[in-house]
Amino acid sequence: MLSRLCGFGRDVMLAAFVGTGPVADAFVVAFRLPNLFRRLFAEGAFNSAFVPLFARSVEEDGEKGARKFAGEIAAGLFWTLIVILALAEVFMPLLVHLLAPGYYSDPAKFDLTVLMSRIAFPYLLFMSMLAFVSGILNTFQRFLAAALAPVMLNVVMIAVLAAIGIYGMEPDQTTGVLLVSGVAVAGVVQLGVVAIGLKRLGFSVPIMRPRWTPSVKRLLVLGVPGVIAGGITQINITVGTIIASLESSANSYLYYADRIYQLPLGVVGIAIGVVLLPSLTRQLRSGQEAQVYHSQNRAMEFALALTLPAAVALVIIPDTVIAVLFQRGQFSDAAVEQTALALMAFAFGLPAFVVNKVLSPGFFAREDTKTPMYFAGVAMMVNVTLSILLFPAYKHVGIAIGTTAAGWVNTSLLAFVLWRRGHFVVDTALLKRIPLLGLASALMGVVVYGGTLVLEPLSTSHFFIVRASELVLLVLIGLISFGILVQLTGTVDFRAQIQKLRR
Image (cartoon, rainbow, N blue to C red; front, top):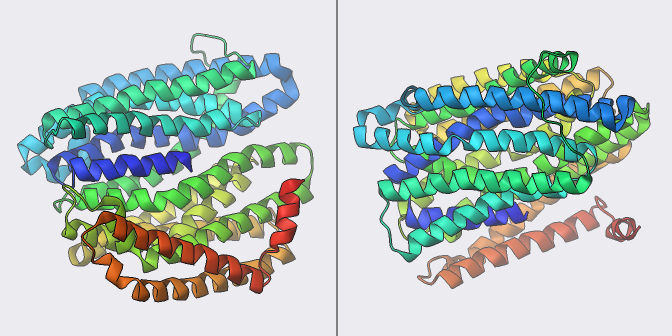
């Protein structure tokens, strides 16, 4: 939550000082390139394969064997990243041309994007090693350092943007270079945070030369499907970026909308996934099948309880959210309107994106990375097809609709196959609570919509504090009404939950 709130602060400042012009478009692509490769090779693919194998090594070989395993994997990962980094720096113009072909018609914008991408790309190395260290920490049930690391990216970026604002710098090449330099520096800081966490754990990773060992081979066997699945996911994002580059400011609209719906996804979905994977792996290794089902059901329940009302709220008041958070400086009325439309389209897919994070560990904990890969391929075809078909009529909103539809297809396939295999047994409590959560969320939406009608005069005020007050009041109305509704419908017994929390 702290990371996302700091991220909002960063994006508010980015919107005010950079807006949605050429520098903002260049920054979105420059920042997306290392993140694309990071998610492809590190976070998703690497952790889905590494955490179950490392957990097995800890259980079967003890700490000494686990250190040896970690050293072998670290050596292979580090030198692979060095090669990728060197190739990317040389062929950066080609990468930018592939990712944002629409920029090629504007030489100044294209050259700026290439320069910014070269400066930002080393972020990949630091973040990939961070994913490796985080996997070790998470296996030992240490989650704080890895969760705190993203906060540091936003702290560094806020400092850079504050300097840009203080000196009144215009959105130009110097501003862009400063922004991506902040990204690279933040990578070093983030890796430092998890390295300190690893030192406090007392677990050291030996420095070794890269070798072809059974451990590396097994990781590749499990990791390659994850890389392909992650690659398919990134192709979705890349196709969206390519298509959006054909419309001026479209990448910026999608970026700002993405930042909003990533709040519940990052706080709820990713957090659940990070904790659930090592937990399920440990329970399966111990033969605790009943505990596995219980963990999955409660994770699903928790995810939907926090995600459904958030999705409904973002569908009903996207313009209010965008206006209060971003409308100042370079961010115009038109930018608010177009970003709000994209946010509304993304919001319909939010429950699917979060539930995906609950279901995927059910495959990864059993060392099955191929099935999610196949389903990601199907989702990619849905996303690409819809984005291409809808873009001429709906522009960037069509891309957001394609992303949402693909999310639902992927999640539905994961749920069906887990259920068919008997790896996810839905209990009575979950069957009862899902419809009730849906009903409570829908009724909350009606209450919030009524609140927008009553508070409408506040939205037209020229004073930011008045418009911000409207958003705060609407959020409070939503929270209170949802809390009352889930209690009245019997979805949640707050008294029992408080007792559990105390225990």
